[in-house]
Length: 315
Image 1: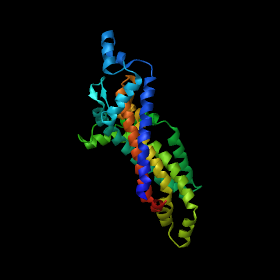
Image 2 (image 1 turned 90 degrees about the vertical axis):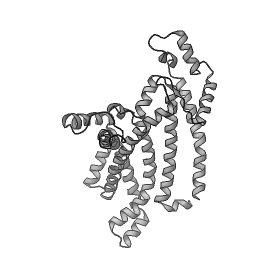
Image 3 (image 1 turned 180 degrees about the horizontal axis):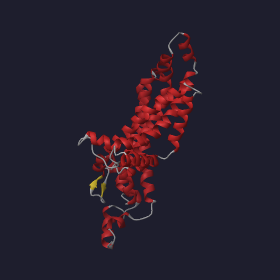
């Protein structure tokens, strides 16, 4: 049954990625400006522009350009960035670990704050704890991340001097300095995720606590802690897992502003620079990798469903 559940999902990935490739390729061609002119410099020579257009296949029909890029994609070739002078796959290999580290730390912050807060809010329904958790959660969703980041830089980095205000050091070079440069942006990213997870966890827990199996567990004399953690939470986590997988994917693709604020050379900064410089190959490669990661995260969420609630294996 598990295989029958996952095989259709895997089959859906092919048309999904194909549709994404069509969209990213087509929409980029609607952007104003000529990438050949951008690459040619401030005083472009017509001969140089013509040569660049020929190398980038911009003098060919759009359908031919797409099929050429798609054939390379199927062979694992994401293209070449003429602006930077490196293969797109190499650029992604350099930048993706940075954003993955930042997203993983931010996600850990979101889970560590959001899920416990949602549980407490549901268990302490209509109390001061519930009211405070909802106010903080609403504030976390409403306040822009970049504004929180700027305020924390001024307070924690400038006034108190506890952490460096910007930059990034890889984990392989100095793990302590790497954590010091990423803990603040990760916390900023995690606050928004925490607020979202808190509200959904609270809603799912309230629904679970009103179910018959919870009342039966209480009637059998189980302690409130066991009822909440072993019975209600296990079932309430199923929709939260879905949200968590999507939110982690959002962190990977939505950390653009935070990476700009904290000067972190990650995925987001690479995309922004590539869009402004009409570096089609880089944008297309980044979007395809991000789409593949989203699909992988959804498959992971399906696997977690079965681990959390074994009854779904026979569904």
